[in-house]
Amino acid sequence: MVATDLCRCNSGQMGSTRDKLEKALAEQTLVRIERSLEFADREDGIVVAIGSRWLLLHRVVDGGHPDGYLAMRVKDVRAIRKDRSFARKVARALPSWPPVAPSHVLLDSTGELLSSVGEHHRLFGIEKQHERRAMWIGQLEGLDLKKAWLHELDTRAKWRKKPVGYKLGAITSVMFGDRYLASLALAAGEPRIAETVA
Image (cartoon, helix red, strand yellow):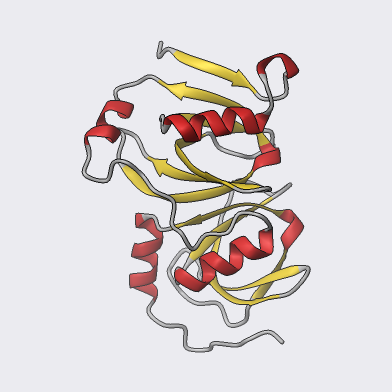
């Protein structure tokens, strides 16, 4: 069994969620984050930035290697565990250490987050609350006070014909900069129809 330190974030005795996240940020330690959402996966990585509503995790895959970033809502964090496996030693030994937060990513509102990510990353993925475990991937085509409009790709790297709108309040995570998205972008090429939303 792998030894971990569990921080249950809803316990007043253990401190607030933000306190635990700030500690993880300061220590730059590899953590495992569990969220209260029904379909959310456990996420492994290093906390590299915290905003008023969102946090940014430098994702780490099995074995300690970095693979992009995941922004998640602070309010969804249920528990934080320090990872004491060999992966933390590998992560610290790689040339990519120490991880840094991209300076362009804004974490104080969903709209700011999507705008800042969409401006610098051709493709990103979103997850939605109360939905099955899935990610919707595309490029940002428009943003208003209530919705983000994505020109999406399907699983065969084919562009859909029209942008789809997603309610900002339902978005629970935003993923960008990983190997899968880079491969998908390479396979997809430029969209043939770049319809914009007024």
